[in-house]
Length: 135
Image 1 (spheres, rainbow, N blue to C red):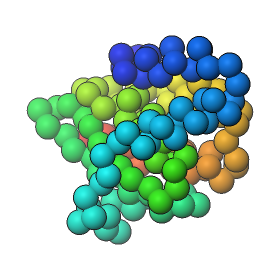
Image 2 (cartoon, rainbow, N blue to C red):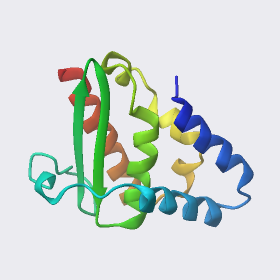
Image 3 (cartoon, rainbow, N blue to C red):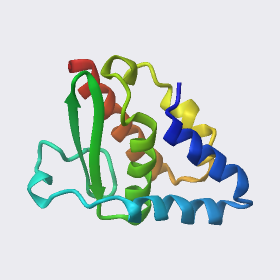
């Protein structure tokens, strides 16, 4: 069910030997992302339940889901980049069918994130699912 872009991350992670390298790779994914326009960093796009500041800006065009996002924490920004690769480009009806926890488990993220980061990641996934379900 994962997108081709997400499968590329899975392949990258298979080549990275230890978690520190994987962690650095996630951060690099976030650094490569365009920053979210400051005008979009408003209460409506802010995700509650995250230890750091997180904003997600979803766009649905022609039945296709995509979102941009940003955070003030580098690892969270990287997690947003990973979620973008998991969801962006999917038909909006398929977004709610993605088992994000299972897909992210393929990366081992569930084993290496703090409880706060894991809660924040779940909050981001829930926001994405809510937006797609409402569309």
